[in-house]
Image (cartoon, rainbow, N blue to C red; front, side, top):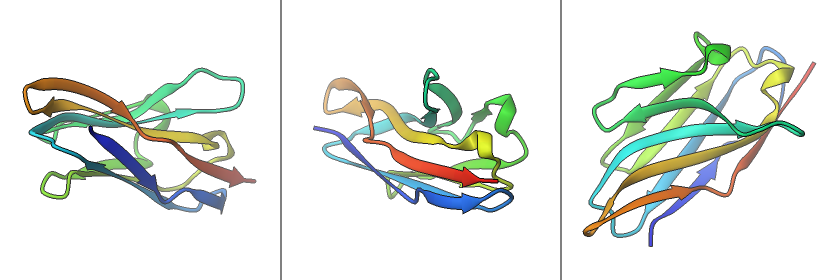
Length: 119
């Protein structure tokens, strides 16, 4: 069974930085996509950034130029460096991964980590 464990959330003042990490474990053959999503109170979950196994990235317009997603394939870990944080970035951040485990495709979510940005 594939699992994701996130870390790095917390509280920071506007303009500050945080780095989120998400490590995958289990009998994983390959991870094709890893990404970060977030859900603010009263809002739908939205894509923040994703990265493919080849390193291609995609960002939400609201975070371009401020957030950077990266991955360490050997460690099966994805990172989200968040700079110049704004109060509107406050949300629970979830990691998601898609890939292959054995002969089966998988899609799995992490438990979420809270990021709070105060003004």
